[in-house]
Image (tube, rainbow over the protein chains, first blue to last red):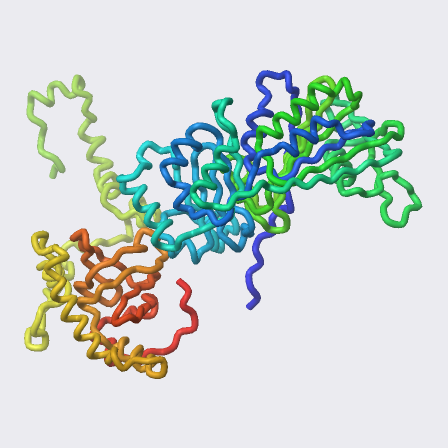
Length: 362
Length: 223
């Protein structure tokens, strides 16, 4: 008898939203905050010959760092909880392991410690959890959720002691973490977390930020009309724009040359006259605050740079256990969790959020 | 003959005021309403309460159950159900203390060292020791649960008080008696510098049966 074939899942999901930054009910800030682990930021600037310095400075000045071999027992230490988790937004993610094979750990700004454990580790660790949603039938991964900021989570209490014992005496789990900390008090320096870990005897080093800049001449950039509401009567729709952005980011020739051997792709809708177009991608680990500030600075200087529109794409880590908020994330064909803002000069925006097949969409 | 006795006069006079139905109306649907109330649901579904002509219900010849005669000659002791009822194996609260069982653990230690011949165990004859361990008795051993499908069992450790086919009854150092199923757990104990691992899934045999039983190799140790 043949093995049962698992019901095929969709390759991905794309959610499209349209709003304006000026709209009071616009949720763009929460949306950015909820996407905790940002791996790369890429911008497409049409009609722009030089990458503005402001992007460069805010990305390169990112204060994320890598902590090597941090024992999990340190994460639940009271000093860290009181001094950092409760007084700011701490985001930590285990680095180097794959989500479908290894154990992954994340600390969220809400004070939750999420352990995404393989079956072997889960059975030996001794902490109660839930089987992961993905893959659905086969219970091979388990999720343990510990609320670090809960009032009952302190030394002397039964739950705390159990967690401590499990981390310390059972397996002695250690992970490489990438971390950022955004203090709620502006006078405290975000790098004090790094100092704290160094004091505890862990090796820390800043996350290397890679920069990839490209400039293309004579590009036919789509002419997007932000006021358009109804896509039915138009030549192009929002997925076409997203496709174009993707193609452009990969450096594909999009000049719609019908005789081209490699690609005859062209944008369906109207295009602007050929112009120079810049593309920049920074990869490393970025805090949500950096993303916020980049979007804000682009919004502010849209007029000055004379851009028809500008796109900012933020990619999450493939192997992060969470995508948005506390929604589970997995890796089947691709660990996609990314969102794209297309910003227009009149402060309206289009927002695409793309999910992989092992992703919960609310 | 009337089905019901006459109502008392003071009730009868006020029937309209109380809102009682007239007698004939009640009498007419007495049988059907009785059946509605008492017939099992599946017979009601077949419509037996309506079609009464061919149905018979014996009221007198009901089979009586024979009282079970326990063959006293064959069975000397109590049945396990009786044992359970008498709470023979339940340990009373005042006897549930870890310290009381430490001597038992010491005796077991001597016993298992004898059985395994622990001093002469080396790499070559460890297999024979494992065979002997299978047939050994575990009452009094100090077991720790190393891994389990249910994470809250993990880390429980204590002296075995009773072993049944599917469970170990353990007293922990906090004087708690816990009943832990053998399935889906892996137990560990240490003796003479060796750490032995018992895979509970393959250990679901009564201790008395185990010493005569032939064990087969099982492929997987996954739980």
